[in-house]
Amino acid sequence: MSTTAVDRSETTAAAEAAQTRSTPCADAACRVLDVTIASLMLLILMPLMVAIAVAVRLDSPGPIFFRQRRVGRSLVPFTIHKFRTMRHGASHDVHRTFVLGLISGHRPDGADGKAAFKLSADARVTRVGGILRRTSLDELPQLWNVIRGEMSLVGPRPPIPYEVEHYPSHWFARFDVKPGVTGLWQVSGRSAVTLEEMVRLDVEYVQRRSPWLNVWIILRTIPAVLSTRGAS
Image (cartoon, one colour):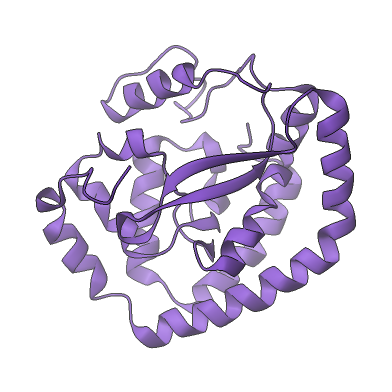
């Protein structure tokens, strides 16, 4: 997807409003925080990541890592990295149909409970992949995306291009900041919140963004992940 794939004329008002909330000082402070914490986490968690890589390889045939194009800050696409949690070669059509149904306001088959925006049961997920998703350990390779400057530790989750093509105009404010490994919605229920609520929390984060808020969200992420609350 190119940066012109989305009609920017529909997003101008939302983007300009959001840009007034992001300052060079805040960006610089958040960047220092990102690089420092992400580098330390990579060093500390490297033995765990090696163990996960071995488990993924032994559990099912295919690559250890899953790479996918996502949409980042200012609608610039980039490649996200995760530990593979699905069977190699599995079709993504089921996810596309599901998510586009949610964006259009429908409740597709597979939604559970409070209309979570992730499939409640996905036959494509491997045994090890299910554990990685529940504990969010599949997200650890994104620390490399953070160090590269494509992501931040805290921010909105980066969507897939085909999702963005169907976004209503008031959702585009979330692209004024870098996407994050964790964010305000993750510590507010993770995938147990609705898609509309997730976007509302993302926009609220853009409005309130600061290094101190980032630290608070990072600290809140630890118990949220350990409890697997709202995970899928």
